[in-house]
Length: 368
Image (cartoon, rainbow, N blue to C red; front, side, top):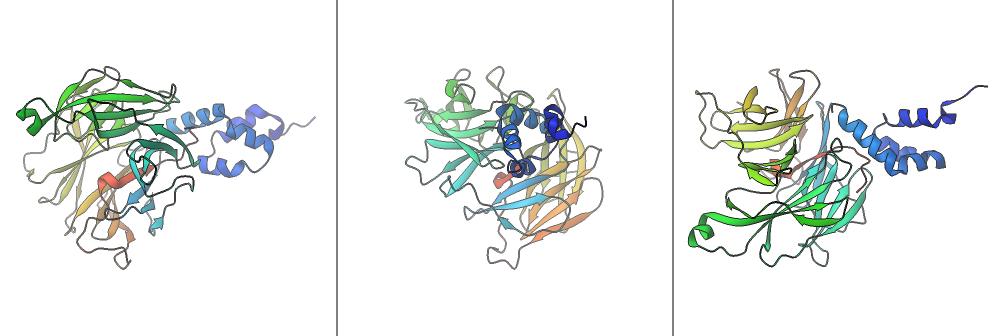
């Protein structure tokens, strides 16, 4: 008797696990059996883990205009594109601000809700599912100074939200001027509850707790990182800049891709960008790539880094003067991906897309 793939559920599931998440959403309409398989939490978790373990070859971005709440979709591939407006699920009523992203999930805020500074949502843009999360009230640490989403399916099928709070008033003039007393709370999707993580600490006001990047058990901000296992704020090594490079007006951005944490250092006066990679021991940075941006005359923002399986196979995506360009990492090659200088949205001499408003969009079936 002849047996087809459709008769062998284990084989069918194994094949579906290799299909991209967006295609699987469409495949739900094939038949009730496929709908049941693809919609199950077990399959969603298996698929998310399988896709996360495979090296990403490219990556999409959501870009938000600095002067508006509009988001636009951009595919980080080396070909010419157009700015495409992005629309969230109609169940989320805007205007919407994305606070953090992690492996395909977003932490966002809908500003016209009954209490926009207390209500947040974890949102999966692939499945368009969302979960409402309410911030806990705290009479001492009143001010929320940072919200960061943590999700790594290779570690857990569940996600966390790290909330950094600061006391409204400090006990001394020195603290009021330069330091603030902070406390970290963590929301766990597994238990749907908030818990304190570690003891209160004092941090400089210059340390910004937004737009953190999760890498190897820690949330990394510019100036430090928080160890989630030990619940402790730690220092990170500084990059060592080659002696012939001036560091005046140096700007640094932290980005993760395919398991590598990068410090992308832009030297405006030198008209060059250096890409450093943090060693697995977190003890030092190593210089991996140098990119010349001699032709840039206006504001420049690093939007994304893409690295392939082979060393040097990838590109750096930047915004400069109404254009989005891709710079090959090891080749002296640059390509214009988007030119919207004739678009009504364009503002001359303005950094309309910035690093902190560029959000990586990865496909995932991860439930929220």
